[in-house]
Amino acid sequence: MPQSVIRSLDIFQKICGRDAFSSIGLVSTHWDEATEGLYDFQQCLQNENELRNSFWSPLVDRGSKMYQFNNTNASAWNIVNSLPLKPRKLLIQEEMGDKHLPLPETTAGRSMFAWLVRAAKSLRDVIERLVHLLGSTTLTSAGDISFEQLEREKVKATEELKGIEQQLDSRSLSTRPRAFTRRISFVIPQAHDLVNSH
Image (cartoon, rainbow, N blue to C red; front, side, top):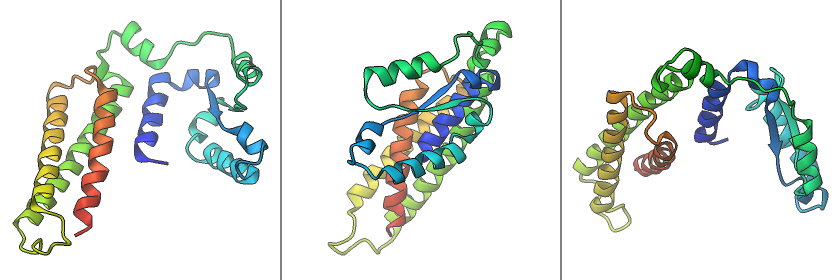
């Protein structure tokens, strides 16, 4: 599972809080295609079991239910009707509403802040390696990546790092963290792959 998905799941858990886990339905899709033979049904069951025992285990162990969606209205309604009706307050509602904490001081906000610190370190490492590559004389043959491409990657990584550092300085995680996270999770692996290919 990609790191960005794991991170999103972690933030999701911290937004909900443990008391709300029993109200969460974890839905896997494409079961209609598995039963029609488009996918290996046993492999699908194995994948579902892997989700249950690894990535989703913190949720399932605390009462979240797993469902298989078969791409029909009946399947969708069966899942919806299986969810508990009792409303539960999310952890972030308690922290921001009842305790009047600003977003960066909530459990989810602190987790996002810690991720930003790690992302900044990763980008600094990538930039350092790109600077080293740009300063080397090994990039002269036609088969190598061009200086211009490395320079573009360095500029892109530097811009992303500036954005992260602004977030860290202000601790203002409320300004579009979702779009920001998507951009970062695209740039870091791309620059990392480029740097490590030399």
